[in-house]
Image 1 (spheres, helix red, strand yellow):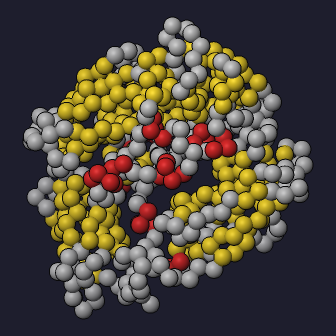
Image 2: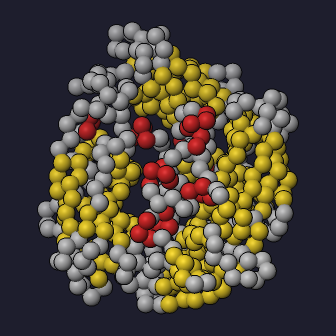
Image 3: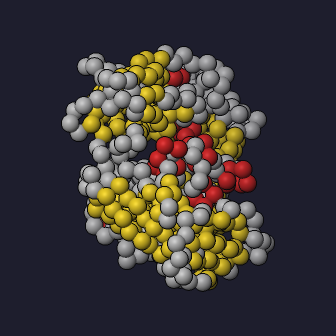
Length: 481
């Protein structure tokens, strides 16, 4: 079984995912010494692989597993290096994942790529190293060629892109290429794999193949033809209990394709749309004939959690209830599911329910109010057969990103630009901030100082309760030792 890969737009963790600032709120000038890590890349025979690209992309620490980035763990830009003729490469990494709190890095996640081998994403390098370079083995993988046909069964390659489960299709060195009338994928890791072809015109998906399951072996060569079908669309509306005009409305959707069996990974298609003041929205360019998972948010209302669909895993069916019962938290929502038509347009109504709010007041040990501190919480959505993410954040469209070859594009959040940062706020001169748009019930929350400048206080972690009428909670910040 291949390791389950975290999508760039969905976390594979089943626990609630906090925002990046919940992991760290560093002072910009906090010292962070650089240390050296070494890896040795070999093939399945143990021979060194020269010219392999080694790209560390994430850090594991006591804060969890998160992106290595200037605004993420490590507070720096990760390097990209290549192996020499001995298969060796070395690179510098920050000693601390959170420099101001001196939380050390424990592991580095490295992507390793070479055109003659299957890419690997989850190569965990323990740090600091004491026993020489970490050994990483590359496998030959399988070659897959797919000849796409249009709805008239004529060959078509113009604008056709390939997607597969580990989401490496966004990587410049892992791009599928056109060879005559076929789309040729880079070598794929042996094991279970799902592949989908999609035709893009502008930033709009017009045609899809069904998700194609493969059981691949090292050295295998696969060739097939597959017809593409016109995309489906949706005309939707929010339920009538949401007052019109609707303010700041948006819906986010996922099509999470997963073949039967325990060893199959999930292939995601993401999209979102604004909701008009009359409560309507339109989604186009969706995979036809597949289940559409949907969430929604507007001022004062959130989409109700959906019932478990037939394809849901048994462990998912009562996940929200178990979390509520065990921890008293209502910060875990599940999407509503609608069936997309094999062709044409679907009409649907999204059931909505009221949200709540809570005022947080922040004081120092002497009882004086503290202005300019950040309070936030992070209600999540757990996608069926998929991972979890902060509710309606980020908002991304796979159709607009599928031909992008840099991580910065995939890290962009359309929603942050249009709607601002969700479930957070900064205290005023009286030390008060009101968190709005929260699902009714209990939530974890944190209070932190802004990034940059000298920090005076420990990060505060606590619980609050959101209600439609509004609640309040008072926080006393503890000084740093």
